[in-house]
Image (cartoon, rainbow, N blue to C red; front, side):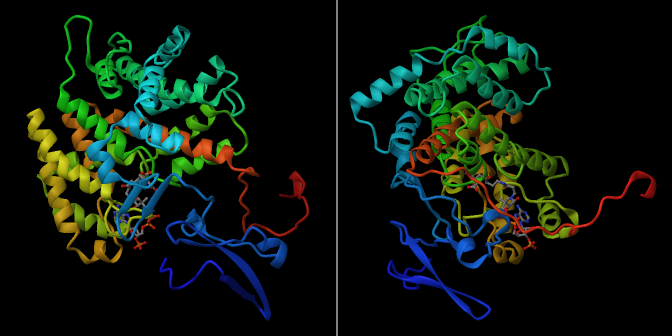
Length: 432
Ligand code: SDX
């Protein structure tokens, strides 16, 4: 919003028929202006209508700032580019949840807590046995996270919220890795306290009892970068779901489990899996990427260029820019040559020059290149969204905690415009 339009003292004027209403405005620390409509219905009898909430702010937040026009993403004021280059996932998780970069003592204590809460109750292993081998790991993940409330029933906000935050951050990677091992019929590999968060995740996924396994440093660093880039993204679909569920004072595990379900959708976190499936389809179709660009432009085809477009970024997604830059380096350091990367680059090059995409401001988003790096790391496609959830967990937790700590926080309950039948009398069966 151009701050020349409105200033802090301004009120917005609303005219309905011949009546004029003053609405207060609120201005954020980055000069974003919101028109406060919390008293609109009381004053005017009308509500606003904003399908998909594209123009509606659900909260004030100090966690993440995005400027979609300028391709800016900052966690607690720190640019994503600096965090990606200089920080690590545990450092960023602490920053998002507690609001400041941890000092040495805080970081050591946080890391100690995360390593000493990474086991799940042995009884939870029985839940894995109940799933068919073909079960999607996202379904397992949301079910297992929700079931944590059975083992830690006091996980509402008033309980020891920090202990339950640590439990969830520590255990999600164990649950994710166990769901992978279950899907390939291999024995579980338990978490190790001597490894970093990312190395421990990879070790639990790829180590096997029959031979020693050394986590390649380049793969560990690539995963840590991917987790940082996915860690938060203000009021996206899954985060808004976590806030919505948490606003009823549901416990932390139930709230996060709902966020995992929302993220699963192919238009949201499920897109990284869809991107690879799309690129493979193009490769198997002779690599004719121009055919799929034309399909995406044909509304009748219902085909979307997965990994492209974003509700907020109308210039470029800074995360996609970072990942495109690191994809070449990571793949060459791992020693992988993936034809899908070339197809992805060709798609991007063509799309960015095509009027259809330019007019609709469609650019690659975080999901466009992430799958190619996960693939090079040996992570199977159906685990990509699980990795997204692992990265997004600290953001979900930070947002849930901020919502629960907001003075006067109310249960989320939007209104609607009813368009159904008006009043009519009941028709008995014999007369229908
Ligand atoms: C994530 O919100 C977040 O912050 C999410 C996220 C996060 O970190 O949490 O960034 C992560 O979810 C990224 C997005 C991943 N999803 C995909 O890559 C799926 C493909 N993208 C689209 O489905 C779409 O772009 C969305 C869902 C991302 C955004 O949808 P919008 O904002 O509702 O936009 P829209 O569907 O109204 O599209 C506007 C126009 C339409 O054409 P017209 O009706 O104007 O003719 O653009 C077209 C759409 O048909 N369009 C696309 C397209 N995306 C939008 N056409 C072809 N291919 C696409 N990918």
